[in-house]
Image 1 (cartoon, helix red, strand yellow):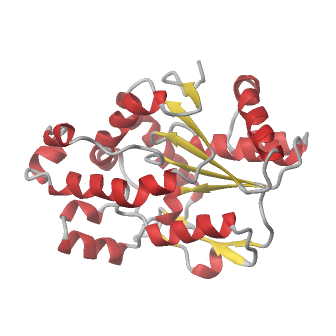
Image 2 (cartoon, one colour):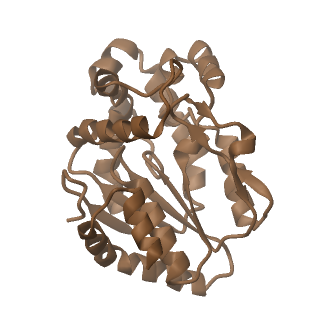
Length: 287
């Protein structure tokens, strides 16, 4: 099975990961195949997991298994590829709140593009391009470098750190949970805007997913280390220039504060809402 060897090599994984994952996802794969056999519609799979939890790796693994073993045309997409560009976020920063200058939270994605993309997959259109975002420059790739979609798909997997995260209550929004919120969002404008974005623009899209799964981290405390590992991998893949946006350890420590509120909210509320829950230890192994 050369595709498995290529997968392990791509993500620098060992046989233990493969053994662990093969057992864990078998019921999920069977569920997806069963649903697809009963419908001619494109099947949408939503994956939630905090930064560095292995969402992209899992999405690619599921796609490979569905393609090669179950003969279902499958593609995986990341919510990260729909971030607004720096100019668009600068507009949000000046017109709404400065914290929206930083990509990450709901409200910093191009929701119209995401909606149109889901619709194209659902309508089984071909000959269009799937967006790609370059984190090293903090901007989308030029459109001629987006992925060409030249076929229709049986299964579409969408993964994202806040994908599936529900809105918070007014009482929850009232409490500062870190120094960033305390110092830079004292009037709660930023968090309320983000929460309203979830209600108006994200939750309606959640309804389009047919199966939900979650990679549940042991706590938010592991996110710093996992995110640091992600940035190191990105640095190895990228030709560093003066314009690169790859972050230092100190910058990551600050950056993850933007994600803390919704990550902890997801860890608390999503496990009882998803169809498949995968509990991780600090080494990202499914336990």
